[in-house]
Each structure stands twice: as C-alpha cells, then as structure tokens.
Amino acid sequence: MSTSENEYRQQRLANMQKLQEMGHKPFGQAFVRTSNLREIKEAFQEDKKVSVAGRIMSFRDMGKSIFADIADGSGRLQVYAQQKHLGDQVFAAIRCIDLGDHVGIEGTLFTTRMGEQTLKIDKFTLLSKALQPLPEKWHGLKDVEARYRQRYLDLIANPESRALFDKRILAVREIRNFLHGRGFAEVETPMIQAQPGGAAANPFKTHYTALSTDMYLRIAPELYLKRLLVGGFDKVFELNRNFRNEGLDRTHNPEFTMLEVYEAYSDMRGMKDLVQSMIVHLAETVFGTLKFGEGDSMIDLTPPWREAPYRDLITQQMGPDWFSLQAPEASKKANALGLQTEPGWSMGLITHEIYEKVIERTLQQPVFVTRLPAELVPLAKACEDDPTCVDVFELEIGGKEIAPGYSELNDPVEQRKRLEAQAAEKKEKVDEDFLTALEHGMPPAGGMGVGIDRLMMILTKSDAIRDVILFPQLRPQT
Image (spheres, rainbow, N blue to C red):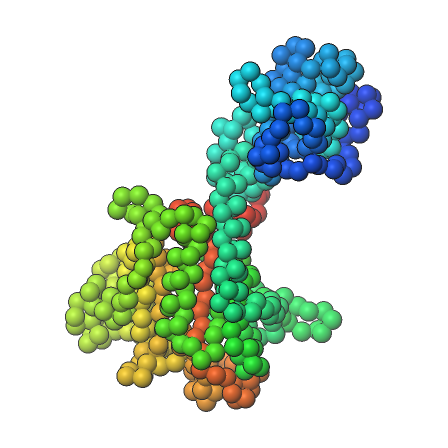
C-alpha cells in the first residue's frame, strides 16, 4: 500500500470513529427499500416519500447543504441534505461520509431548479463503511491488469464494463429462453469425471479422497449428453463451464462457458439452422442490430450465412495441387508462411496448422466451414460420398471458431475404432462406459457446441476473452 493510499485509509478510519461516537454503526443491517433507483426515477412523483439505498459516488459540500449522488445496481440518483432540516448532529454525521460508503436514505422526492430529480434526506443510515478509496474520479480504472484483478473496481468505475456484463447476462438468459421455446430440456452433467472425454484437450487433474481415486475436471460434457440421448431424451442442452489445462491468450481462458446442444433424429444441417437462428435472435433481441463493428472490420450477421468446404479454403490459400504434395514439401511451404512445423508431421497436421494459423483469422463474416478431415473429428459421422471427410461444420465469425456442429456418430463399432486410434498406446483413455451406452442404441442426432465467451466477444465488440469474463484467470502476483 502506498503512502497516499495509507493516508486515505487512516482518514476513513478516523471518519468511521467519529460516526461511531455519534451513534452510527459502521456496518449496518438490512435496509428495506421502496424499490431500486431506476424504478424510483421511472415512477418519480413530487413530494413522494421513499426509502433507497446505495453507494455514495459523488459528494458536494455547499456549507449548509450537501448534494451527493448514490448508485445501486440499477442506476444513480441525486440526494440532498439540508442542515436546517436535519439538525446539526445528523448533518455533521453526513459530513463524515466518504465516497464509496453505502447508505440507506429515507426522504422526499423533489425536482431542483435545474430540473434534476432529487431525494431530500429526512433520515440516513450508514450501511457499510468503505475503508479503501475508489479509483480517482473515473479516469476510470485504466490499468488493464487492474481491471481484471479488481473487477469489482472496474464495475464501479467504468460504466461501459457494467453495461457489457449486463448484456452478457441478458444474452445468456435469452439463449435459455430460445432453446426452451424450441422444446429443449436443460440438463446438468458431471463436471468432475473419472474419464475426461468429448474433446482432444489436456484436463485438470485432482484426487477424490473419499473414493481414493484420481478425477478430472471435464473438458466437455458431450459424452454424458449423448448418454441422455440413449436414455430417451430427444432434445437436451447444457450451459456450463468446461476446463482445459492449456494456454492463456486473447481467445483462450482455461475455464470457459460452453453451450452444448443435442437433438435426436437431427443432423449437422439441423444444428446449422439452429445456431444461425439463435445467434440472429440474440443479436436482434439483446443488442438490437445484426451489424457489429465499423468499416472493413464490421461483421454482418444477416442470414443466410456462407458455407465453404474445408478443402476449398485450403486450395484457395495453398494452390490446387496442395493435396497431391508429400509432407516434406508441404512442410516447406508452411514454413514459408511463417509457421513452425515439426519433423514427422503428417500432411493432415500440416494442413490443419495452415487452416488454424493462416486461414481462420481471414474468415471475418459468418461462414460454416464443412467437410473437415475425419481424423480431426472422431465423434462425427463420415460424409456418405467421401469417408475421409466428416459431416460437420465449424462456424467461424470474426476470425474465431464460435461453434462446431456434427452429424453425430452413433455406430459403436466405428466409434470404438476411432477412439482407440485417437488414444494410440494409451488404451485406458478409451471411455468404455460411453461405448457400452452406444451399444444400447443412440438415435441419429445432431449436436453442437457454442463458445459463449467468444460469441460475447463478437456481440460486444471486445478484443480479448478476458474482457467478457467477470473473473478471468491471471498469473499469480509475485
């Protein structure tokens, strides 16, 4: 703590002591409000008696009167204290209030000569004393690291941050409403699993003492949701956290919010229609527009969205003869683009590195990338006309993968082959319980996952995933 910060704290402790001596408890009890500040202002009536509570955000001492602004989670309201009306002792107590303190106020509404809705204080109650100062007069909280580490100050100091998260809250609620309206049931599946599956990712490992066994935080809920299809649920979704023990960057956080949806007797095309309708609905309902950003970087969500086969995107970038090359030659061409390939990489790995590192970021407008190589997606059905490709899409918006969607593989024999191939020598990674469930008969189905954090980046025009997560993962402070 700096010298100046310590001085501020000492002054606040002194004010708290004065208030205690005047009979005001610094950390009060519950306070009954007429309603929140936004509702008070919307239903404003001259001379109406109301009770409100909030944090002191500004304080203007005019000698024998004081004007202040208080804020709650809904908005702000000006309050007015008059020494003649309150008496010397109460007025002196109000003078000991600091910015950031929470107060309860009972009073009478009126409009000032300047036309501002105001509450004249009849009685005040100290509810919580703030011992630390708020960020200086909202130069706001400009330090990006501080905004993430002390999100509570960011929310107080930067109204645009609060507005962003209010939009996210509304968007998540509307996703649920949309899916419920389509007949989907929201379910919950284990987040601590004995066998992580449903994606190729490094899991977080823990130990369950009661069972004396190692467990894992889930990397995806997919295999449990498919068990529910076997069990007779036709339309299910889960909106919750996944965990992947991997890197931190502009589009990755190790703990992230994912929507997964499964519909029996559907396929990739059903999921394609569903996700396009859902995102367009969100954009129009919550954000009031289908266009996000400005100029050349503007993203237009107006349907229908383009569809592009994976192979076509590769040959457009690398030339029509790309897939006739041998891996060493392909590796040289990839390295010429500034990519780092490893000796022994297969043609498929090199190709996908080009897709992820070079092509993907160019896909600014919504596009469904289809017919991906089968080795990349072991849980999807093969295309009927080409078993080397799978019947899937990856929805790309703003140069980021937002949602993969599959025609789900429901053949347990083929599924075993693919999972064993993916596990290679580590056969213990094959989820035998899931395969047993498939052998009881899973209907043909469409499934998809939607990265909620990345979608919010698009809809709120945010540059980094940390901007749309209330408490993103950060390196520990030393």
